Image (cartoon, rainbow, N blue to C red; front, side, top):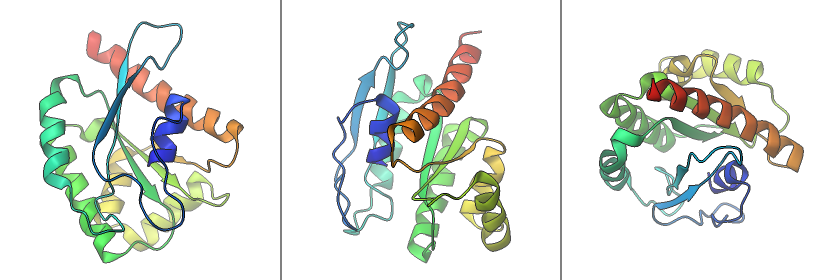
Length: 179
């Protein structure tokens, strides 16, 4: 998630862990002017994983933070690593799904799959439908509809592509919210 936040903001403000240990231990919010042609500022919030490698459970903290900024929330971006989804991760995704529903953000969800090793959106969608359709992950992907991105942050070109998709999505939602 931190790598995604850095790619989104064109910065290195969010610490990234190495190996299998998470670096993020508490919520971190940073405000950015994501589009240089706009005065609009966005806040990107990086959280510890709900199924963090150290067993840190932060759902209540995320819920409190979300409620404190809710009127200004434009989108929810759920970052999911590709690969085997454990029972603990499914539980965490269930909590994410509940947070999104509580916040009324069901139609404002973008799902980003990371560590995709050259997978396409179609292959990831197919795998989710076959293996996880009745799970929180399957429901999140279904709710996201066409708003599913597969990201491999191996070079600046892929970072630029993901940034463009996410900023386009957030920008459309922000414009709609101003109407």
